[in-house]
Length: 132
Image 1 (tube, helix red, strand yellow):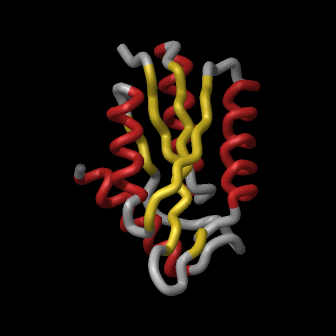
Image 2: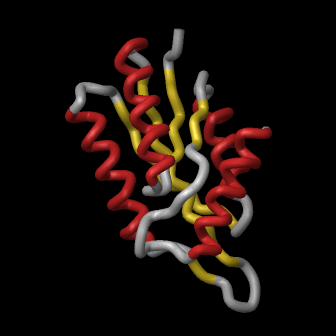
Image 3: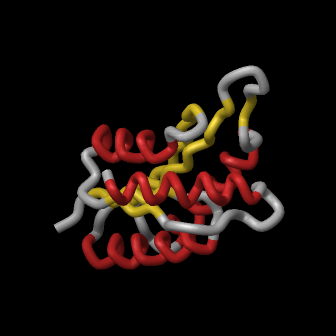
């Protein structure tokens, strides 16, 4: 049925729920899970990363370790993207990985880690991904 399942994570509660669903599906189908986190970067006069690289690595490593402890075959990846391109990066990763299922959670942000505008961008990226 499924050979690979791509799940994009951002540390939000919605992403956690999507991750649980992907893990359950992965267990039932013996699919490999590909955990993806996209770090958006502001481009322009005040350019810079929206999130520290270590924070992104910690998030992906934590999720990968958790899923591996559950007996799943899992790989993690972090991709960088200009601000507003997270959804396109997720779709491109799915195409490159030939994933048979892409999952992105809508809404929310990590408490204390992102601004409300970052939460809006996360939801906006999720919506664009779902519509792609």
